[in-house]
Length: 260
Image 1 (cartoon, rainbow, N blue to C red):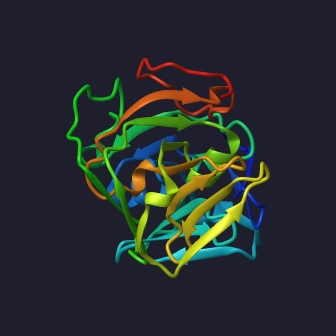
Image 2: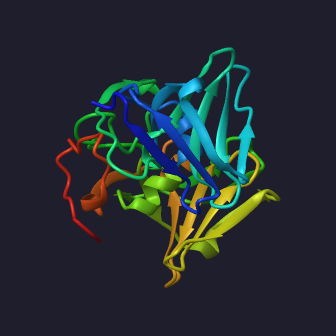
């Protein structure tokens, strides 16, 4: 379906833009701890040989060596999670949420499902009962940003708007929190990006991990993937589904809203 087609994409702010010549591999959804930490929920990506990828703009592209096996590319200005490059391979995994238009792809696999968060299931409805911790330890992937706040997370909302999909690389999942009750341990690498709607996204400028969002009205939420252990939360609804990606289905039976 993507044979011979040029797929364009970018981060949210446009500092990183790319083109990939089809065909593209179907999307794999990864639930490993690293992907959940960096994206704020879980990551979903296609893959393309390097010879069929062109970086049209890369002034704000930053790479983080997340392990000996791979490095991750993100925008240091807006924090968008974009690429995963396996060591010793001539290919690049590209976040499915980074594409500008329909991908024409489907989700073929869920991997590292044993590391999925306690608030959702990779496929199907979320668990009915989870542990309820009294404190939540949160951190970015590299550990340069770390904070704690009272638990449990409670209701967690999945957002499929274009902004959240561009920033997370798939779609976001977050829970409301009282910002004044965050106890920061480290935040030297904390960066903020002002979104087009006047909100602000907090992320780590060293590893690109998404941490929190503050709306223009002051409402504050924490990315569920930033929690290091059990969240004590449960995914309860999906919003802005009219803007969802074409490469996945919402199959958990939870309430859906076309906008807010």
